[in-house]
Amino acid sequence: MKLVPLAPEPEIQERQRHVAELLLQRYPEVSEPYVEKGIEKGIEQLALHQFERRLQRPLLKHERETLHERLRRLGPDRIADVVVDLSPAELLDWLADPAAG
Image (tube, rainbow, N blue to C red; front, side):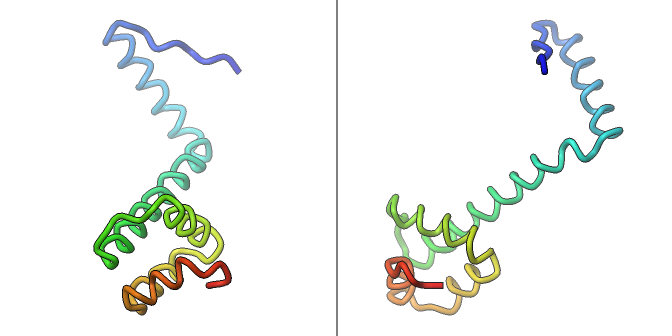
């Protein structure tokens, strides 16, 4: 598939944008993967914020990776339960435990 280059002229850019909007209205399924990806990213950012707020510090890189993996594996409901139900010390233990679920 060949991409249409973005025109340097604002008027042409506006027409390109309008055509894209019309195509998305006609074929809404085209945007679904992007919407889903945006929702997932928003959930990840929210979970990260909740963990960092609960622990009162930024997560380390390996902790962020663990959270990301568990969010995919366990789902957002379980992650929300963990961050609300566990004490900060228990939350750290949960992040450190490879078998935690």
